Image 1 (tube, helix red, strand yellow):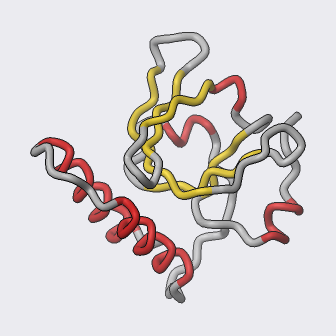
Image 2: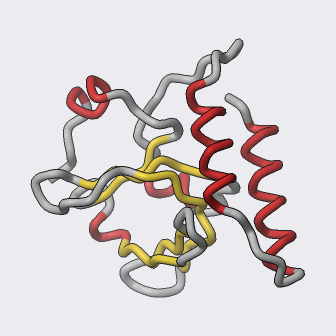
Image 3: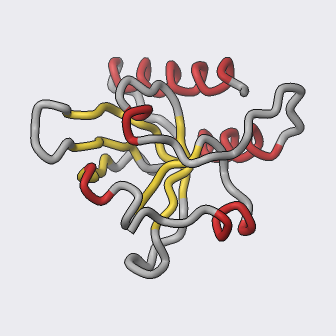
Amino acid sequence: MRMIEWTALSDYIRQRAKTAEEVDLGTVLDVLEWIADAPMTEVEETRVLELEELVGFDGAVWVEYNPDKVVLEGEWMFVDFVAEYVKPKAIYMIRRHGKQVVYKDSGYGVTWRCWNRKPSEGEREATPWTA
């Protein structure tokens, strides 16, 4: 897994946010796609992350939407934080252009899910949705 690159990108965005500098998330997305497509020496199996793995996650994930329930294309997002103190839990993500979105944990695996890497069409089709 390319944790160094994920961490560097995450640090870049957080530092810019703290200093109120603009973040060119389009450029960040290009880098993320390069990382995802680049050959790796250590290959971690592309897989759907467990909801619990998003708590404290520091980096980007590929968000996929259930085509039977939502008409949206998958996209790279940064996990901002997970609010565990509310029910249902709220997962805060940052989209490519800096917009923050919130997902409920009750929809995880039903309408949306996160992958550790961008999955191929075959990987998506071979991985059933939970409901």
